[in-house]
Every structure is written in structure tokens, then in C-alpha cells.
Image (cartoon, rainbow, N blue to C red):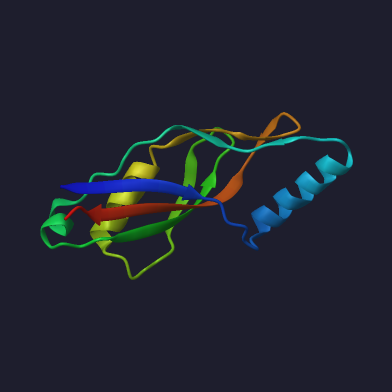
Length: 124
């Protein structure tokens, strides 16, 4: 029996987009603004690749994504290059179909960076 589990983890990074968002958020708070975090509204579970399952390959795919203003994942990039390529492909294929309620800053949608972890484990 196999199981592919997805867990989302938000991580602060030093990218230009996050610095810009942090500045916007700080300015919003200073002026009484409000930030509403993204919320996942549709999550597709990845399909465990048969080749990886047969070979007993397990692992966690770490993806960097930008959640767009319409709530769709943009610019998905695998962060851990040592992971099996079949697991990476399955994770990217599934996460690219996820949908979020967009992040709002003062009622306006904004893009946000996020880290998404997709776990592939085989039950014993």
C-alpha cells in the first residue's frame, strides 16, 4: 500500500517578491490595513509513480511556488535536486492543479511565495 501526502509549509525567504510583500504588509499595518493569508480550496493528491513504488523509492519533494493573484500556483520549482525525478514530476503535476483563495492585502489580491512539501511514503 502506498501513500502520497501533501503538507504545505510557509517559509520566509529573502526574494524580491517577499521583500516587496513585507513592505506592503508593514505599510498596510501602519495605516490600519489588513492581510488575509491564502487558503487552499482545491488540493489534488499526487499519484505515486509505479516505477518509484516498485523500486521502493520514498522521499519528500520540496517545491517553491508563487501563489498568483487568482489563486493558482505559478513558477513551481523543485528545491531538492537529490530527490527522485519521478517523484518530482508527480509532485509538480499535482500541485500545479491546486487552487487557493488568493492572499488579500487591503482587500486586493497579491502574489505570495510559499514552500510546499509533498511526501511520498510506502506503507510496510
